[in-house]
Image (cartoon, rainbow, N blue to C red; front, side, top):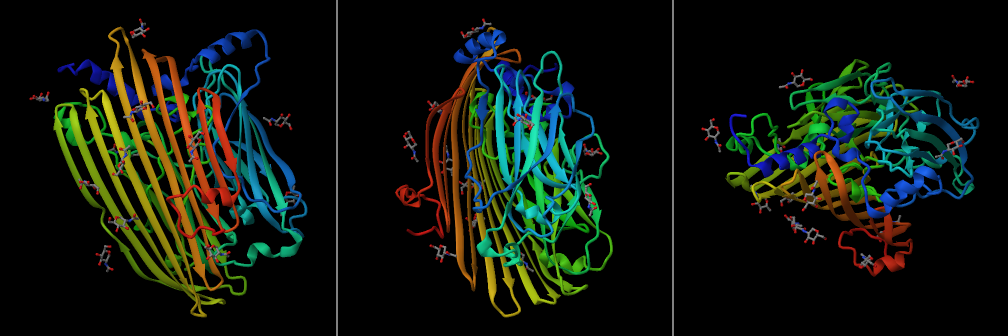
Length: 609
Ligand SMILES: *[C@@H]1O[C@H](CO)[C@@H](O)[C@H](O)[C@H]1NC(C)=O
Ligand SMILES: *[C@@H]1O[C@H](CO)[C@@H](O)[C@H](O)[C@H]1NC(C)=O
Ligand SMILES: *[C@@H]1O[C@H](CO)[C@@H](O)[C@H](O)[C@H]1NC(C)=O
Ligand SMILES: *[C@@H]1O[C@H](CO)[C@@H](O)[C@H](O)[C@H]1NC(C)=O
Ligand SMILES: *[C@@H]1O[C@H](CO)[C@@H](O)[C@H](O)[C@H]1NC(C)=O
Ligand SMILES: *[C@@H]1O[C@H](CO)[C@@H](O)[C@H](O)[C@H]1NC(C)=O
Ligand SMILES: *[C@@H]1O[C@H](CO)[C@@H](O)[C@H](O)[C@H]1NC(C)=O
Ligand SMILES: *[C@@H]1O[C@H](CO)[C@@H](O)[C@H](O)[C@H]1NC(C)=O
Ligand SMILES: *[C@@H]1O[C@H](CO)[C@@H](O)[C@H](O)[C@H]1NC(C)=O
Ligand SMILES: *[C@@H]1O[C@H](CO)[C@@H](O)[C@H](O)[C@H]1NC(C)=O
Ligand SMILES: *[C@@H]1O[C@H](CO)[C@@H](O)[C@H](O)[C@H]1NC(C)=O
Ligand SMILES: *[C@@H]1O[C@H](CO)[C@@H](O)[C@H](O)[C@H]1NC(C)=O
């Protein structure tokens, strides 16, 4: 090297590259993955367990889980269908596992009110956390991350409400599951996976047609087009976006009688961008001569274009995967969204007028400031005019604001502060004329982003405080001149503190504190009334780990989580904490009365008692 970096900084860089390059990356670039997160993370009782369990199978597997409200189910007996049983061993670079899907035999005569996907997996040994996806007819219905196993074994189950894919679920389809795993002498964990679906018939009182009563705003789409890669391929069906100039696209054509459209985007970030919110700036990199280090800064946005015109944006939630930051933080309570990654909806109805011409159009994805690699695909949900073969429409306005960006930094050598604020607004409106009359839709996406970063102790200490605020408003003007307004507000606060102490003997201790929140309010106002929901979900975690070379030699992780959900008909509250595989306390309540005492700060349109 032509210059010498402070040694601690080298360590920080290696930690950052661990933060940046990880586990999921392992699914794609096996040779470059960091070793850190794949270790058996030893903690006193586990070490003991590990020894005992080699000779006896007595230790039961640890159950991992993500804290989330239960799915509200009708009071009917579900039909259970086992969709796939598979052991994901050496699946990296191989085609997705396929299964022929058929709907329940009575799907012609029976309406289902809820359809729930159930993922259950077991794993034992040592393995990375792996990203995986489930597609039905090329439409992604579930994206998730595996839990990292331990020697005594783990088991976890995820339930996802997949009712919005109703039309697809009522037809024969090919199901594809891609989970790129690698098994060798070191990484021994094989994921044994069961996927089932539960079909809950509608309750008698609603009659057969319940799903379609409020067709325009609530009902599932009539047709869902996959905006993903086509089979066959030796990978997931997601597109891979490698840098900020990389554009991935898909051609599609819609039926000429669509009257409503919504694009659902699935997003996950890996390898060099797994922890994009901690990324440095070019300026910093240049000042400190850190040649070869990516300096794209901590801001990312996923841009969606239709025929080369930006129509919507996603500023993603900062999912921390199960091996992220300090793997011990996520056992057994996993990070928010890690077992069921959020997808993001973009209202497309205003743009229908541009694509109802029976011609081929193109949807494109790009990621501002991206580093290798982002996995992105989407589903185009379409509602069709059942009484007409042709609708018509027109985009009447589109305004995509430039990114409004302010940036400040003050550095002396390696230490100092960065601050960055970004905001953006996208508004669109258009009309669609169908046999239901002329419907005018206006959609607004508003985003704010703020990131404040501190580096200290010769860059051995990093603090990141970032918040993304998102506000979406969709106004639907019906022919009767009645209006439906759906407003959704989300905020994603993230605080990350990392301090590295070098022991001067080839090992260092990393202390990490994380606070990760996902808050969401939604309300819908129409002639029929007002309904709202509110979620406040917050994890606070602290951990230490002693790292030698690339190995975690010992460590400790503690996580506390509070989850408060309220809507017009239900409440769910949970207050839970874990420390190194053990649950410290776990309080659950579904009583709205008790919830009221909590004075939830994030609450508009809450259910009054
Ligand atoms: C769906 O698949 C089943 C089982 O293979 C078959 O009996 C049925 O005819 C198929 N339905 C259609 C519409 O192709
Ligand atoms: C998966 O399904 C098989 C067959 O029904 C069953 O034996 C096994 O216990 C299931 N595994 C899990 C983890 O539920
Ligand atoms: C960006 O990624 C694309 C796709 O992999 C590649 O062709 C291109 O060379 C990359 N550009 C830069 C500047 O690295
Ligand atoms: C960075 O490198 C340049 C050219 O090699 C050198 O002049 C400058 O002093 C270096 N800056 C630092 C902070 O090391
Ligand atoms: C577009 O939006 C920007 C910022 O939101 C606003 O200043 C501008 O007036 C808008 N332009 C039009 C044509 O509506
Ligand atoms: C970003 O916003 C925060 C809070 O509003 C403010 O304190 C900070 O100075 C802003 N930073 C920049 C670079 O504008
Ligand atoms: C993060 O920043 C926000 C506002 O910019 C502030 O209210 C909050 O206290 C900060 N969090 C921490 C842990 O410093
Ligand atoms: C963004 O910040 C501006 C100025 O503080 C505020 O008026 C706006 O409501 C914020 N938008 C969101 C989506 O939080
Ligand atoms: C290095 O030093 C730390 C702190 O004193 C100690 O905990 C660790 O065991 C030492 N590691 C080795 C390999 O000597
Ligand atoms: C990190 O967490 C530890 C343990 O809870 C706490 O003592 C410390 O004050 C925290 N530090 C910061 C900067 O949040
Ligand atoms: C969660 O439980 C802990 C331990 O009982 C308690 O200290 C804390 O106040 C509770 N938090 C909430 C929001 O109820
Ligand atoms: C939902 O709750 C809000 C606020 O309490 C209330 O105004 C509204 O009437 C409720 N809507 C329904 C459909 O129950």
